[in-house]
Image (cartoon, rainbow, N blue to C red; front, side):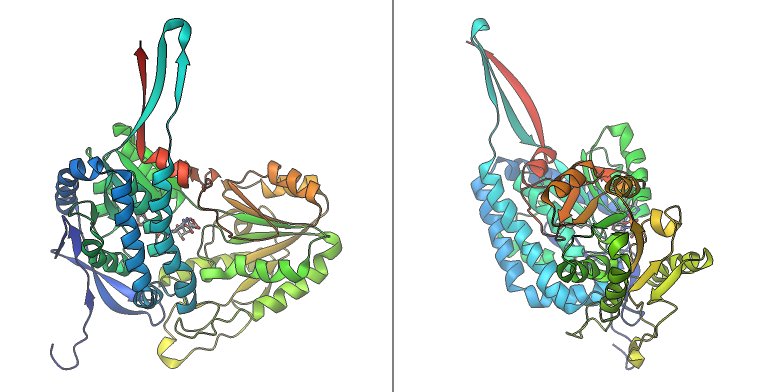
Length: 488
Ligand SMILES: NC(=O)C1=CN([C@@H]2O[C@H](COP(=O)(O)OP(=O)(O)OC[C@H]3O[C@@H](n4cnc5c(N)ncnc54)[C@H](O)[C@@H]3O)[C@@H](O)[C@H]2O)C=CC1
Ligand SMILES: N/C(=C\C=C\C(=O)O)C(=O)O
């Protein structure tokens, strides 16, 4: 390398158990500095063809292994991810912009847990049997892996969401072709280095890097990939649905949210305020489960707002390696501009910006001043019809509005196209059950946020997606069911 010339981390595709270079590469940025630091393969149809061939060859042997044998491999992968926790967390934080603390305590531990969880749950599935004695018949169901699974994941929780798809797919006996987001590909590439040691045979997990329109569409439209699991935005899901429709592919779509927090006057504000700050701003607000509409009962509205703004101002934005930071950088310049534009639109509509963007000053070290940082921003005096109350912003921006009655708040909470996650804060158990049941939301957390039970269904209603993931739901999705009738 010539003096003064910058060295980049150069990723390679992983196909058939081998790292393979690509003809062209994409720039990948460090969100905390705005500088290019990594080159990501810009793959296309050719690489998908090679991956399909490898996955097709690996399928008969892998799908014939017993669940116990596959479970051992998944457990070894979990061990290896845990052993590489620090290295993976450092890489995830640099690549995505999230704090090192969050990558260490949430992203990477959960990635290991995904493998360990499905290593266990695959051992416990049962099928059904019924009898028709009057016809001397019995009927039973069998489940078989679907084949080659196409897995497409986003940039907000890169390894966490990728492994949430890979683990159940291979546990059920499928082989996979995964396409991580082109914005955050590094930890997926690092995972490939662990596969051989874990005993994953060549071709069982193939990872192909590149953009959605090029390599993503080549994967989705491939006739030999009968199943697509996708997490990302609603417009991309629409496109995937269109492309896969002629092939009648199985689809699981985990999409966005416009998640309400409903705070009744009997809520414990000591617990509710810090939890709602976290649910609004964790991971820079870049989690599909983040709160972005806070409905507060009028009798406690002023007190809540004052305390919530105070707490939001203490949610520290810092460089990702700063262990005292609560929030790092947003994913990209384009995304930062998009999130900021919502704050400008709110102001133009007459809303008040109580803290954050355009109100407070962000202080950053010199080398991070071109990074994609933004302060946690709280908006009020905003109408339910405003785009800030309707559209997914996917950044550190949350709106706080008052409400009067239970009936009214349910109606308003349900008045958006999304239906992913809600939180309800109250000490009245009857009210909690009533409200939770009436909310159009795949997940409702009461008096808490983001406590995950991986056994139970995860997914959204309305434009938040199709299908559910979890122990039984993922098994159902990644297998085909057949009913067999025996006359005896
Ligand atoms: N889980 C969620 O709710 C997420 C929501 N978003 C939302 O989406 C917005 C845009 O973010 P993007 O990164 O552009 O999300 P996206 O939905 O475009 O990207 C997600 C994944 O889909 C792939 N992809 C994109 N176009 C594709 C296509 N035509 N065919 C196949 N794969 C394709 C991408 O390469 C990436 O791997 C964000 O501002 C946010 O509002 C983004 C990421 C996650
Ligand atoms: N799908 C997303 C988050 C999932 C979290 C979980 O399974 O615990 C997302 O942010 O896109």
